[in-house]
Image (tube, rainbow, N blue to C red; front, side):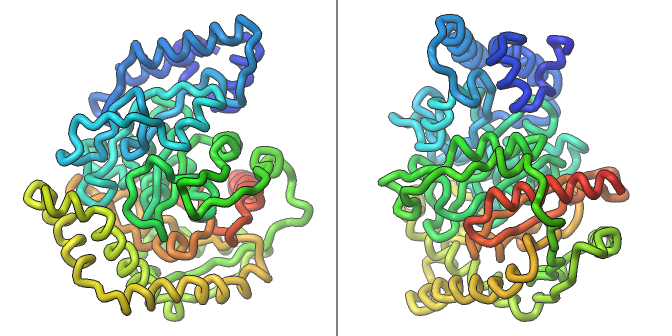
Length: 445
């Protein structure tokens, strides 16, 4: 491959090529930096990027390999980090003037895991204000007049346009799946509690989940395997054997998967183009899909999600509220005002609904391998004053289920239209396998 095109290598292929000595980490990192110089004036994906620091890491990885030292599964591969995830060698400013200039003392647990796997921490990607709704500077890579989504806007855009093969994001509502859909990349939000969140901006213990972006399902699996683990500072993780995500994702399903097409609580917000696209998809998959209309039965879930999210946000951002509410956006101030007004009774009632929702979905998953549903109301909305509606992700985030965006469709305006695939909690490896099967099925027509 032309050295100037190395940035388009998948992470899986790049790691193999570096391990075999076909390319160097420095060559790959320089190709990614060249792509940044070429396109980032339009995309504006980076909150912090020091090219020499990225190259220094890459040269260190190359030296380690030449010396015969142990190499990890991501040795020499650049990874972008959302700017709410702590990095001891780069600022982490959380997209907020309130945290401007903040450089953490320690890496987040996920960053430490990536370094142990040999990855190059390429730079910090733009997030919305404190990972909420007020947009950052990033533009949609397919059309700069449209939103890239949020809050993991920079991470999704950077992968989509070939600046890096992998990027970390996070999701408290729809902040991985929605930007993945709008930017046309694969996005994965694993089961709640699978990946430690230590060192990540805390909004909601109940809902916060790390996720990531790639240009292939195999790359999602490769990255995910490096991040799963227990951390004593994240009470929602637990000691467990790492699931073999990559091995399972690349395997053929033992039987053709059955899928449930679910019209969830936000179905009435779906655009006509989305409705038609999913009707065609269901028709094309007729032998492998059955329909379940849960729009009415799950309708209260959007309110339960909002109650939990805003109450916990108000608690975790109390210091910012007390010291800097006048420098917050009107949108964030309104969220925190609502959160501070939520009663303990309403909060506890909302939390108590989560196991009931999951129990209800158990009956659906008895008949299918995964749920297929829209990732968003439609393609990325025009304009840069909003990141789009996250409601098509809220239910699955509330339930803590693993979810994937598959960039399988396109709107009439030429922008990506994502397909969301959701599995039962703990089924992450099988969900990746089903996603790979579905992508191949759609590609085959």
